[in-house]
Amino acid sequence: MASNTTVVSDEAPFTKRDLMLYAITVFSWSASWYALKVNTASVVAPPVSTCWRFVLASILMFAIVALSKGRLRFGLRAHVAFAAMGVLIFSTNFIFFYYASTLLVSGLLAVVFSLASVVNLLISALRGDVAGPRRWFGACLGVLGIFLLYLPELRDSKAGLLGLALCIGGTLCFCIGNQISQSLKSYAVPVMSASAWGMAYGALWSAVISIAAGFPFIIDTSPSYTASLAYLILISTVLAFWAYLNLVSRIGAGRAAYATVMFPVFALLLSTFLEGYVWTPLAIAGVALALTGNLFVLRSARRRGAKLPTPVV
Image (cartoon, rainbow, N blue to C red; front, side, top):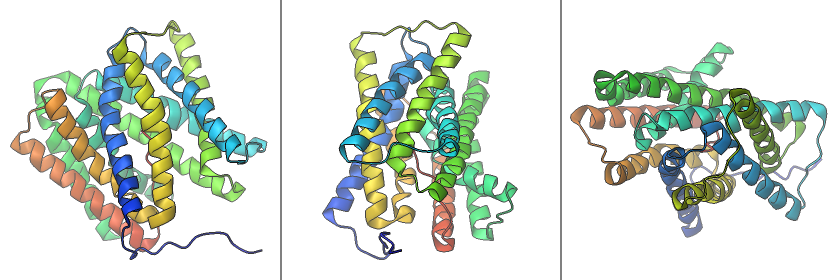
């Protein structure tokens, strides 16, 4: 059987289209953290907002797959994986970050999430995939950077500790869900199809949580809520995901993953201008170490051909 896999060279130079896709991806995900924070300043509970977001996003994803004549029918095992993805990536992950955004400026959330590659490394180690010393060195730098970045928040109040714990919980959910999504490759499931089903199951799980907690299914018609929700659906979820997947197909997953190093910087800059975030020497050192550690992990993973997480925010 002939293979239709495109081999992408890690040494190929960037084209203008590659740079445009990078810009779309980085900008969309950078601003999404602030949009998420704006979304929480509402009477709508975070699980309900997550439900609305992925009900609408899944409809758009299904439409895109159908219009492109993609595959939508799968067996039971694939749907079990879709459901697990939905619960972890497209529901619980976001609910954790929604609540964390009520305690911290949005840029701090992005920095923790950018270390998904480090968390993935730890999960892989538990499964018996022992990485080389360069990756572990990068992981240690990343953890130290997060500690320094959050140290002022941890000193000031218990809210900082709770916010960090929620961010770590959300990132862990994402990484476990990402590990599950890798299993779908054995079923030859296209990424867009898997995402459409995952978002649908995520919306359903968010609805279950909302009902169990007694949260009313209401819509906030204020301009700030509707605009932020529209951004999270159209730009952060659909457009950014399309741009990132195109980027992966053009330049490879290894080089595309460096977007996860870039967007936290821009997210913190947005927090500086829009939320009054104050940079301290500890914060500067923490961000530098966290991003350097992430770079070490990503570069080492590229060399070993390791699987890299697909960021979805």
